[in-house]
Length: 214
Image 1 (cartoon, helix red, strand yellow):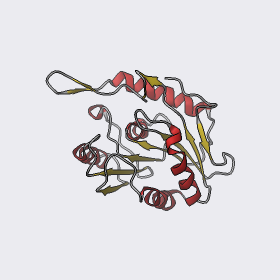
Image 2 (cartoon, one colour):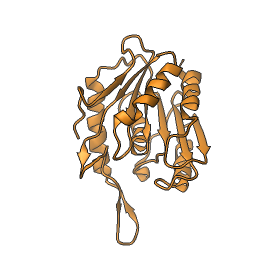
Image 3 (tube, rainbow, N blue to C red):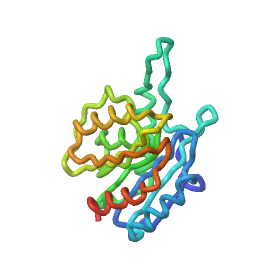
Image 4 (cartoon, one colour):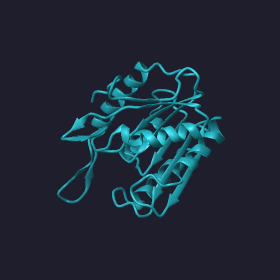
């Protein structure tokens, strides 16, 4: 997976003047440009206090993907590629380092669907200092391998719709139970929407960031 620092990467906000850095990851098969309007509004809601970096995943079998998707076995069980996920996250850590973000500022990782799953996995890695995670319509990948526990300084925002047919609400409930057992600061938002960013997401995310980091 190659992350382009130039034409293929979206940057929003003023890197020098921002109070918070954010890495945003799109969903499987999507791209960063589809979230550009929402991310700009989010930054406006927060008085331009964010510096947002939104890369594009590379194409795998014709679809943009951050890591190998789970495989469905003949017995209907699911197999996840742990090594593939770890390799992808290693490349993302390299990408974050190349962007030379000020480590004195809070770093938030976030995303939608597969991007949300990736973000949840990143904050629990403890490879670098990540202060918060925003996960919309996602899940926790390779959950059986999670051993780390977050401190009381880290926060997670997680949102899901009961009508989500791409990643079922039951998957969200299992994810919520998992992270609540390992993070004391979990802010969850539920709605009747499907696999999409709900209309009030920017408002609740803005409040989440304001309350904890501004």
